[in-house]
Length: 79
Image (cartoon, rainbow, N blue to C red; front, side):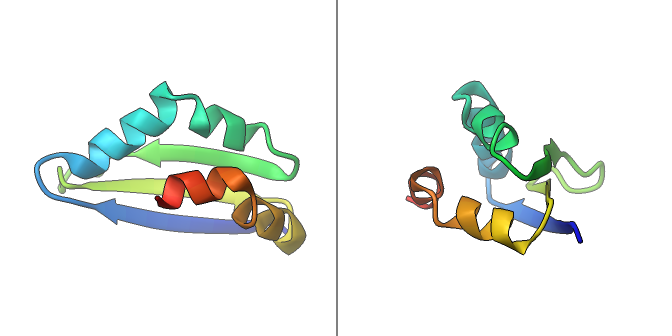
């Protein structure tokens, strides 16, 4: 059973959008997309809220998601 997570990043002065842009520019988003079990990893900008970014993150199963969450890359994202 696949798992899809909708995450809303918010910030002031465009920080959420800057975060998503850096994830794409740095190649981090592409590396996540290439992880085994990743089905989708895409950022979206809501039309009615310029300070929020939506991330749709989808995985084949809980095990794939758990492996992603315990990866060194995830630790880089968090800090």
